Figure (tube, rainbow, N blue to C red):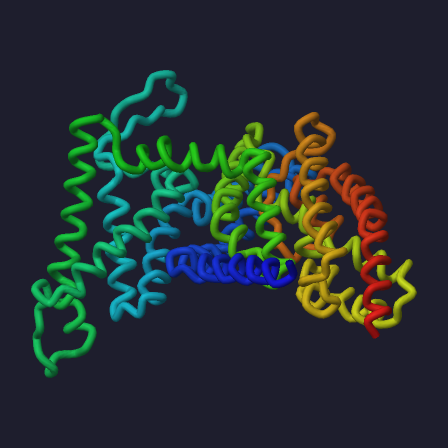
Length: 431
């Protein structure tokens, strides 16, 4: 019986590790890690523009100062699709040891623009009728709506470009007497021309036949359905639970959460930030900072509750020593010392609350947000923001989020407590 369990665990762990090591998923994780400072800046700009500055300034003075926040939005949220495409292309090319990752990035930018419409409908200021305009690019084709298109371009178009570039029939060799970068440019000339021309041909066929550009197709037929499934409450709970289950087997939750769910939650918070900064109702409840506020207080598993339980109630010295060492990092949601040092990994009693407590807190946070007892998250706070501070900032200064976090932490302490006592008893007997 034990052998079969170990065999299943080993196979499951190997599958999860292979999934986490898949080159395209690694490239996406690297891409969003690179872009994280931009999203955090967008959150800080939204917080200042929409929460703090209106408390200090009024009228024309406020409007003048808020121009700064609007420019931050333009430099972050409104071009995130444009940023995603070349960075994804670069990281994928680097992971595949392609010799010209910068060339792949340039092709990705060009391909993204090839997939945009030639004519756009715009609504002039103080007008109720849209007009068709040629020769302009709309921010909606560069920003959050095109983020998933940027991912697809960065992955699939880069694969096409690299495949063509590796074909010797398409390489122009100038010899060893020319500068290396010039040689690379000529080697990539035909593959670049073919890749961009193919993208333009696909885009032209779509525009002529179905009157829709590829970015709109991806947004309406792929991005939005996928986001509705994965960021629905059942989809979110399933993926999040699976990530934490992996963590209890020693495989970081980012293997699942960071690749399948996080990009969509980032797209959600970007939508919320834009809506909030424009004085509109934020559309999404489940976002990346929602996870930080409700489901990862102290890190994965809401282990700030376990740390408090250890420090107050545990009578087992080794547990108290590990807890004391883990308390400092745990305040900033860094809990690897606790997960691997306590450990929680393969600790059957603690695996249960580690998976269950964040799910319960997520459901509570979702319900309370739905009924209006707490504001939606509208600011992208860094994941290492301490509990209580994270709740206040992420909700745009809603003090109710802080109260809810305090109550949840207290509840979490008592949920972890019986499992902690079982774990301490088992560890003590094994000494």
